[in-house]
Image (cartoon, rainbow over all chains, first blue to last red):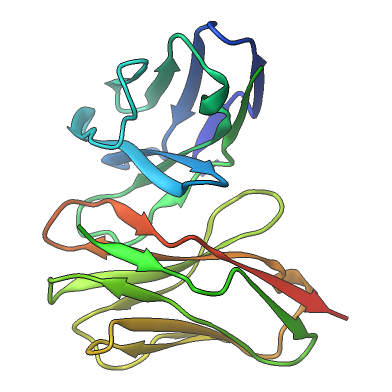
Length: 114
Length: 115
């Protein structure tokens, strides 16, 4: 298996622009997670899905952030409009089911908003 | 809400020596999982070791072992025979069994390995 795939690996954009991050989970995994990593706040969960349905979005910072999972093999995290404080590394992770202890992380997308 | 604290921002160890990373957590639950993840410069998050709270025996994975003290809510990681490839950020993480499948991470400890 190719593991969790994220694209792009790096994104540089200007303030005010729309940014879309993409994730393909491991095939057969029921859970998908979006995390953000910054120096100030560390690793924090933004949202997670179970069988394509959002379960907990309490970590989504504000309305500028939205996430979708239209099918079992694809998810997006969108920021519109982007701001410099959104600069971070965004990770996608997936896990097999509720009893599975391990989350498999993608390589992350480094987002820079200027 | 659960919190995870790693009090050591950075630790240095000589190659082939042993280093211990500390982690404490706060929870009112009795059953949960604890993890240590490694993040090398490549950014990839790699699971190192896990512990289930109901198991008294400390988990071991090759050169990595934990000291799980449930009453003290402490979960330290010991790296034995340190290798240059162990240099990375290490994150302690908590997962509730009752309240969803999400991980709560500590702030991380950077491990430097001196040749």
